[in-house]
Length: 309
Length: 171
Image: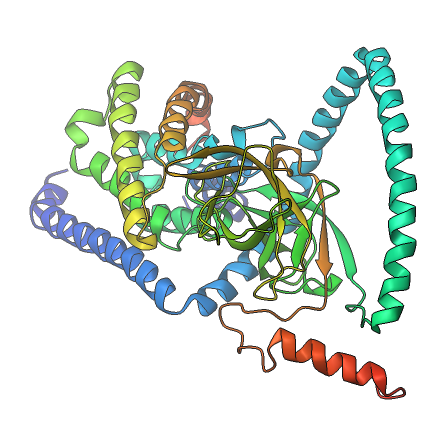
């Protein structure tokens, strides 16, 4: 083993230098990618969705046992509280019966008023139900991957809901998977309205479980336990989708507890309300919503000419 | 004697164990746990893989593999592409350049090293994210994630140590 030692004397430092060079090159590449991703987010998204699409079947398979265990635990817990639950449900049914009659009354009234006004209804919503296959968690991003994609009619910017309320919107779409940006994410901004006072605001996610309500239109006429719903401004979310309740009003902001609990998300509804809205990368809407509505009304006045939607 | 094709394939498969296990950890961390509050602080499992294999078998966990694993983590996690690639590389480089401290040390020393390295990694990730989004992210969740990762390290590291005999000897 005499010869290798001699060679090693020269080769080892060279190899070390090369390794170091490669190492710093890779670090530079990582930062370069970050900067490039900031500049051309669309290209990065395209790369990303292809990879996520490729591993979606694995993620889907991995998420099933966890979901099964969770279902079993929930079932067990429910069984233990069945009597208690029955009693509360009975009182709730009692209360809801009264609400039902009120709702029926209002519905009839609403219907007749709508015909009086010649109101043009918004387009029918179409929805796709998708399973959450990955909760990509982390402290820096609040997003999930759902097992439905372009093949199933999911498009970028569609609204994601559960029975409880708004969960977020679709941020990128692959062929059979899509990324859902939760409303708690740092990049989430949702035009909202306080249901009771009709105060407009923007719901801003900040990577905590409690997004904040900012830019209140009349300087904070909000109290705890006020319901927050989407306002429909901006045309991404239709008005009136339930978001959450205000849990605290403090100097540094109004905190909102979303109705949708992240840990409970197993199946979500991806809803196409037929809105085009303002999204990054999409051209601005040609017609202002108010103008469009007026146009729609005119359209409705003269029959046999659909809006072509 | 030239090894047969089967032997060669077998060797290659064994060489891939570190990279493959770490990639699987990336996916495992993304499985929806349905435990309230856990999603935000789910441990950064891939970092454990990168650290363990770099400390024990740097020949099977070269920088380019670390880079690829980091990119995969970024793609699955949905964060800025390149963030975890850089962070994992920093941890990898820290071990390789401070090999005297890490190589051939006992488990407790390695765990201590992991505590330092993952703290540095978390801090670096936080700073880069703050710069990237030009916004300060609440660090509370990050602290809990760090503690959980630290607590998961012994479990995974012990498991990996058991597989060491399966790997081919260092060339």
